[in-house]
Length: 376
Image (cartoon, rainbow, N blue to C red; front, side):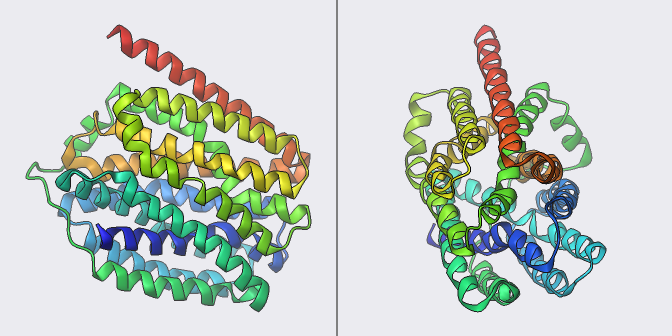
């Protein structure tokens, strides 16, 4: 449990460097919000392909650890090209390469944690929370590092974190494999399930504004003339607020229906985005980031909990990937592309108001799902 938790802390902290600071890095390079949104959207598009591809390979080969190690090494190689490029087209190409190897790492690490949690009767949230803590510590510390050494040194910070992540991956233990064979027929049967497809549609609706905020909040704060350290503080408050929900979610699931918990999270998501749309104060944005603790972890853990009841154990990595592809991939594709240009053309307030409306639609769909399931 310590090894997996440590790995989650390091690897999610490493990705926090790019998630929160690539936007100001590209602004420093002279790119506009719409161009940055396009870069992020291309990365999300690539993740839609790469996540299920690597998840299927992992399930097929019955290994997570070796795939994680391969992806981490490839990710570091691709990142050197990303930070070395100056022209938009070359940056898009290298970011696509980076996302092809980096985007499956989180879902695979979560699949490994889920397997361990089931094998040893541990709570998945108590391991996954270290990923959120890693993101928060990364956001805060990197913010001050960037302020001290300059945003152009971001590549040094990322590569340093990456080397540590590779060393931590070597200490992982392989999960217990299931004897059931994995082939394309089983994969096709999985994605013919109506319940799974409906769930993924709801996840997409709720995920679009979430993923927009992941990359565009930094841009919003920069428009308000906030320094990089403030960006770090905002995400530190946000990620640290997830700890109570991650730690005690197991108790919630023993008392509440997973669909009900997802509905509550979607409603709070809507409130959060409407607050963002109504303010132009960096202080209010930072304070509202605390709502992250009642949105993402509850929605994420409840979705995983529900998916485990409809996805076979031998396809766990694929199921986890399906969630990640929908929430982060498709949601990131639409959220980054549309969100970047919406902020550039209409302002952040209008973009976040649309996000609030989408979250409400997701909540209504979940209420309908709950009522439908009660009739079965």
